[in-house]
Length: 109
Image (cartoon, one colour):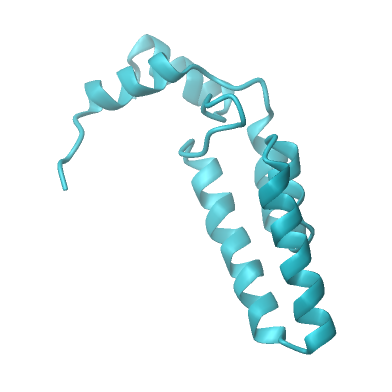
């Protein structure tokens, strides 16, 4: 796998654009409400949200609690990815904080 330079990564973010979605809200939803698919609904990907919700419901009905644990664990990983600015919204724009946006736009690190 090829490593991206910092300049290439910044250009990738600039060309994709930045989402109007609040990164903090997305992280909190992902960390706390992943079982209900809340972060996916928030970032505009309802099919993933419905899938997450259905898997959670089926896990509860069938007693597959380890599967629910995996969904919660996935929510924590997704929260970390959102916090790192690696997740895109439905329009293909990166969900980043204002500080990350300024750093990417003005070349600060």
